Length: 452
Ligand SMILES: Nc1ncnc2c1ncn2[C@@H]1O[C@H](COP(=O)(O)OP(=O)(O)OP(=O)(O)O)[C@@H](O)[C@H]1O
Image (tube, rainbow, N blue to C red; front, side):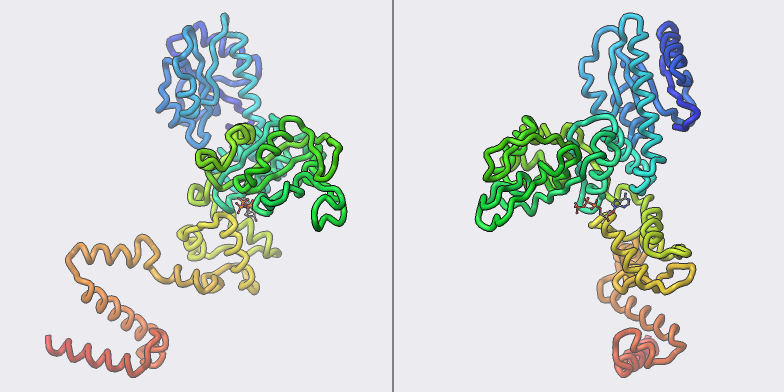
């Protein structure tokens, strides 16, 4: 969506009367309506329920390409959840003359434009790097939830996808909560044997080792955001306690008789499937409902490969300045082709290792890669179009393992000799064999060749 053209696309060719109401109301709210399909998708498609199928909604709304509002005229649709599940942003009943409905739609559209603007250009959101559709879609939802609601947020995603960063963003974007603290508790560090002093705080002498009184996270986060990382690891004994605090907004420090009030916004993160934990009886269902009022799923780096160069340059810019070197195409190729089980964190660590090896100069070259990475870059085995593919084709053509092995070995010997200008000692060193072994091999080969 571009800022100047807040465009909605109205798909209602057979309904001139309602279309007019819709266009008039949207135009009165500063929205530009196009009524015929154009090649570029507008920000919002407004369509009547009869004119859209879940499949189309799903395709249009995939990765936030376009927001789809479905207006229902007459009898309510049998299953609005089917449309919402397919990705529709809203399903609304057409009120008697439609004016009220269209004002609601206009208000929603204005909100989405604000969210998009924040997601694209705000100094806070620009700390979270990425432009791929999968990333932008998650970021837009995160911004909407953070800025326009006070609900608890559950951030899910694989390890290293930026869940803590997302939680910090909720704090920074919440107009009320950002005045308070951002308090982090890693639930893996909460001891199941104790009754949660990290959360509740404790009085002096409340348990062995409690030499002084200490405030807990519930008190610290008052007025701000409490971030419970790895929430799936919260000991079962503390789950009802947390639920109670969320409902009553009061708690007692361990060893204290006094109820204290607290008012924080809760953000939790997990890389586990909480639904599965709940099924297995390890996570309370009522707590799960409470925590997941708004769930934001962060995509893995596999789902946002397009963002890798951008992230790499961002991290490099943080580590090497004046001037930040560019990435040689071979390095960029490697970064794009390798796997990142540890997601953005792993990419960041790799860039740190590269930055350490950079001793000046305008370019990051393959020589600055850590050894294990260089092997991947230089050995075509790992590349889908490399040796693996040739081997597959050779096997298909009927070559057996013995022939394959000797062919590859011969290729390696020839390349090493060529690279060393025929110097057997250097070539042998390169191949990791003794010069004698290489000479014997060559002699054998010559014998074979003369026999055939
Ligand atoms: N979109 C992003 N832009 C910039 N940096 C990012 C982004 N996503 C993650 N990072 C960086 O990657 C690292 C890991 O991020 P973070 O700790 O938020 O991940 P996580 O999902 O909470 O990981 P874990 O599940 O292991 O706790 C951090 O250094 C963070 O700053």
